[in-house]
Structure formats: structure tokens, C-alpha cells
Image 1 (cartoon, rainbow, N blue to C red):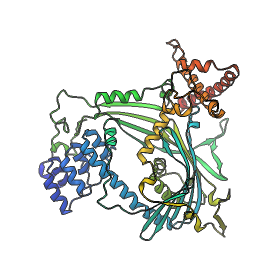
Image 2: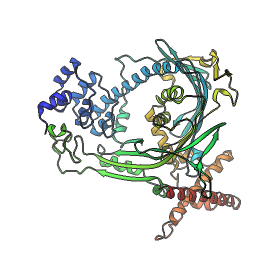
Image 3: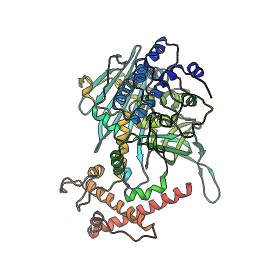
Image 4: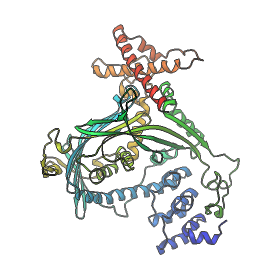
Length: 594
């Protein structure tokens, strides 16, 4: 077993944190001779160790010397998540303030570098079509799609989009352009709202140290009363294999044409979407509330065996814990000795952890002679958008793996529980469909894209806005949470009254707030009925698979579906047969793959 002298020599800052000796810690940090981000043999930086132990004084000292808040421990939990797990609102507020400041600073500092990288790459125009798809009937129709138009010339980038976010009950649509103008001393970002004919301009520079981004009391309370959840794609086991085509025993490598480009089709197997949830910081009331929010519907229960492989573990609770941050009384000699297996013992609150692994397949269509370069031209754009978009962040994490040779003209990757994102690149250099202010020149050995200056300028007639209050963008966390919420709610039966439920009330899982009005669009009415019919069908299918139980009484809401007029009933029965075939095919494929 290691001694104190070894710990003091090998991990001087960690040793002071362990003993919460903040005055000596500040003194050592002031010498600037120690690596304040060095991780101990358990995968914790000095700040992570201080937060896990709940040593407020040491946390303040490390933050005063700009310790990195955006790091993770060996289990993939962030400093912020460990701060939530302590249940200490003061500590959580401190970490949140510094986390937001560092994240904002890093984003601002990183954009000029990204634009400088782009400056060295050939100019281009390309369209990225995003489609959110699902094998669950009708869910895809409730999910958004968009086409990002990407212009790049020198160190200037423009990205057009119509999908702005999800605002609790609606997908927010608009017509916006984001223009990044690179300069020698920094960068400028323009947010152009074409609907409001307004422009917001911001200089992308690091904020002053005096800037304080204080979280609200509601934000603190919300984190302390809800489970800690992290979702990530496990890339360790992923392997790529060429898809095959052909019948009657004759199999050849599969190829498909995507936007006029011949592509090889690959599957990424063993893609695991891992969701881990912790609840040790919650009261029993909070846990019960969290459970009530995640009660599964018949449809979710029906889908459960297909996608989920749940694993649950919980740390044993002792009747009396003398030290809540070191409940198993680990000595520093034990903790800092890499040869000692702690056998499930750890510092911090006893963890209450559940883990769910969902296995998916991803598909790639790769072209070996595509006009664009993935690392030189596309990755910097994805990095740029990943700053504020969780969808682009997930795309970046996927394509940064060791992909097979070729440009991924089309990618289909899992995003959430039953939802895939399909990204397709097309209309390269505006060759398929004409784009204003974009042209191309065919030279002897290459194709060159030409973009006019006006592309990267705001229309002169638009009004100029200043101040943060003039714009509202969701953070990566908010966008991620809201999309998960929307998908989750799209699978919940809404209302129990015999009234027609519209699509947004279904998303909110509320009873109808108003009677159906005659001027409701016919398309929306049909979609509402189709959703109810789909849930009815899935409900009956789930019941029929259980041969030991008799069918339960039909729900009143399903009664309403069954009492539709004869003409409507006939249409619904035809639709149900089609969806039944689809579900059976999906089930058979899922069982075959497993």
C-alpha cells in the first residue's frame, strides 16, 4: 500500500483537496508548477475530487485558478453532474456559474480557429437534408425535417435553416441565416431573421473575467429534484461491414445511387446507445414523481422488448452513514493506490444507478470520388454547428470515428429511443438546382465553386438589433432535453374524454382544452384519428401476444375510435392492416438481427 509521502509527491493537489486544506491549496496553485487538470488513478481531477467529496472551500480555490469544469471522470459523469449528486444547492450554483462561463468562453474562442481552418480549404456550397425517421407508425410524421444550406468562401460561412427548435408544444419554424465572418483578430456572427427582416450582430470574442452567468433559482431547484441522466453512443464495439445485395444464394456488395453519386453501402453494427440515470440526490417524493412521469403506455410496453436491454444497480444503503461523502470509509492510502481493487466501494454519496443499453444499426452511403473533403470542409462546419446544436454534436461524435474510405453522402444514425436521423448531402455547388449567387467553373482537373459577396452580408433594408434579449437560442442541453421530451410525449395517449384530441394536445399529454371546431384542417383531423387508431391497434396487438391473460376492457378513448362512421371505419381498417404488416416486418427483422 502506498504511503502519504508518495501521495504528496505524485498527487500534491489531490492530497490537499482530500484534506480540504484550501489555504495550502491556493498557495500551491499560485506557484503554477502543478498540473491542476492531472487525474488520479481513479480518473478524477482535483476539482472533480473536491466536488465529489463536497469540499466547498477547495472547490472555490480551484475555480479561482480556472480549473476546468467541463471534464468527466472515469465513469463519464461531468463535474456538474457530480455537483448535482451532492444535493448541495450552493455548490451546484458555484459549479453552474463557472461551467456556463467556461463553455461560453471556449465557444467564442474556438470559432475564429474553426473559420481559419476553413479559410485554407476550397470554397463550396452544399445542402444537408435532415430527416428524423422512426419505425414506429406515424411518429415520423410528428418529427421535424429540415435542409441546411451551407455556403463557404474563405473564412466566411453562412448556414440557412428553417427549423429553429422545439418550444414545449410546437416545432418552431422560421427562415434564418447564420453568418460567420472571419477576421484577422476574431470573428463576427450575424443572425438574420428573414421573417422579421432583422439582424443581430455579435463579436465572437472571449468574455471578460468579471462576467457572471448566474443560474436562476428555478434552474437550481429543477436539477436538484430530477434524476441525473446521461446518454451517449458507445463507439468501442462498433464495426463496419459492407452491405450485400442479391437473391438465391448470389450475394454481391451493395451499391446505391444517392443524388447522382454512386455509393457503397455500409452498416455500422454494435451501435449501442447507453442511458445512465442516477437518483441518490432525490427525496422519496421526488423519486415517486419521476417514476410517475415515466409510466409506460401500452405502446411503450409493446416496443420495450425490441429496443431496450435494461441493467439496474444500486449501492447498498447502510443504516447509519457517519461521513456522507465517504460512506465506506476509504482511506487515502487505499484510494490513491492503483493496485487496490475497491470492489464497488467509492467516495461520494452511495450511488443509485440504473443503466439502459439500446442496440441499433447505423447505415452509411460512401462515395469515393465526391467533390468535398470530409475532414477539411465538412468537419469544421459540423464543429461550428455543434456549438449550439445537439443534433450536430451527435453527428460529429459519429463521423469522427474511423469510417471506411469515402465521403458519407448519406448517414443514418440513431438519435433517441425510437428515432433515427438521416443526413443526406446534395446539390453540391448548386449543380442540381440553381442557387442564387452560387455558380461553378469546370476546370481541366477540378470543379471550382464561386460565391458572390452578397451571400455573406445582411440585406441593407433589415433592421439592426442589439442586446442578448433580442434573440433566443436553446442551449445544447435544452434542445436535447426538449427533443427527448417531444418524442416521449408523442408515444403517450392523451386525454380520457370522448372528445377529439388535436396533435399538440397529444404532445402535451393533456385533456382537450376546447371542443373540436369545424374549421380544423382536414389533414390535421385525419392525422389525429390515425394516431388514435395506431395506438388502438398497437394496444390490441400487445394484448394478443399474452396468451395467458384475457383481453382487458376497451378504453373509452378507443371506444371512440371504434364508433367512427362506417366510411371512416373502413379507411381506418385498411390503414391498420398496412401498419400491422409494417410492425410485423419490424418485429421479425429485430428478432432476426438479435
